[in-house]
Image 1 (tube, rainbow, N blue to C red):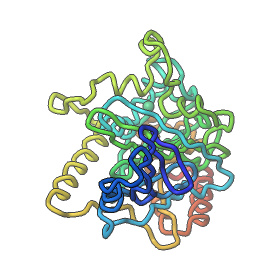
Image 2 (cartoon, rainbow, N blue to C red):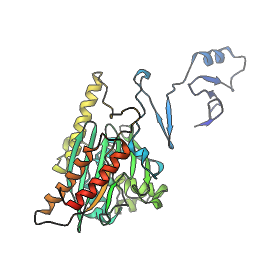
Image 3 (cartoon, protein in one colour):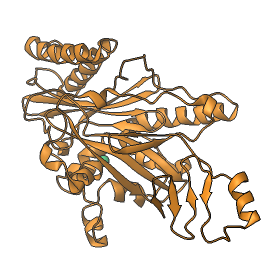
Image 4 (cartoon, protein in one colour):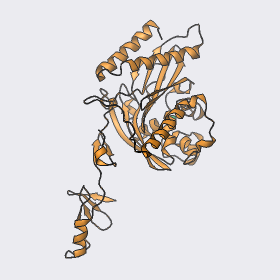
Length: 359
Ligand SMILES: [Fe+2]
C-alpha cells in the first residue's frame, strides 16, 4: 500500500518516498546524516515500467524497452455514441480456463440459458449452429440461432494472446432486427499466476452495445459472468455463472484427460497455437501482434446480427449455419476499408442479404 504524492509514491510502512522511475527520494525514518542511507538513495532503484492510462484502465509494459510494441488501438475504442465502463473481475483459476469460455460459444445456450435460467436475454436458451474461424492471431466462434422467423448470428472473438470480445448479453435476443451490433465487453484476461487471473475490461453500452441501464458495477458483472460476483455458496451452486463454471473445474484443469468434441474445435485450435507460440518464444521468436496500420484502428469481428430469414424447405440447421457463414465472410470482405466505411458497408450488405435472401 502506498500514497501518491506530488513527487512519486510514499510507502505506508516506513514512509520512504520513491520517484516514478523508482529512485529512492526520501528515507525519513533514517538519521538525516546517515551515510548508508545516503548511499542507498544514490545507488538503489526500484523496478519501474512505462504505463499508459487509457479510458480508466492502466496498461503497463514489462518487457525489454527495445521491444516495446505500439499500444493496440482497436475499433472498439471508436464506436459512435458508445459509453464504456472499466471493470476488473478476479477468477481463481488459470487464465486459459477463462479464455476457453470465449472460444466455447455453445456454453451460452446451457449455462446462461437452460441450466441456470435466463441470465442474459431469452434467446440464449436456443442451441445454435457453431462455426469457427482462424485469421492470423484472431480466433472467432460464431453461434447462429433460429428465433422464429429470424436468424441471430453472435460472434465471440479472441485475439492472441488474451484480448476477447463477444456480442451483446442483453441487447439482442433474436427477436429484434439488428445489424452489426458490437461487443458487450472489450476485455483482456491477464494471468496473475498459474492459479489466478483477472479480467480487465470495459463494458460497452449504447445502441451498438448493451443497454445503458446495465452501465453499473452489477451490470458489468452480469455481462462478464452471467451473475453478480458476490453471492452465497448456495446461490452459486443453484445458479452458476461463468465464474463458478470455470473455477469449478479446478484451479488448473487437466487437459490430458479431456475428450474434446466438434463444438470444442475453437478451443483446440487456439490452445494448439498458444503452445506453438510459447515454444517459439522460448527459442527467441517473438509472438505476432495484431496487424495495426499507422493511424488506423485494428478491426475486430465480435458482434451480433439479427436478420429476418424465415425457414425454407431445406434442413434448417444447415441453412442457419450457412447464414452465419455468409454474414461473417461478408464481414471479412470489408476488413481493409477505413473504419466508418467498413461499418457502413457491412450494415448495408446485411440489409441487402436480408432483402435478397442470398446466403
Ligand atoms: Fe459465459
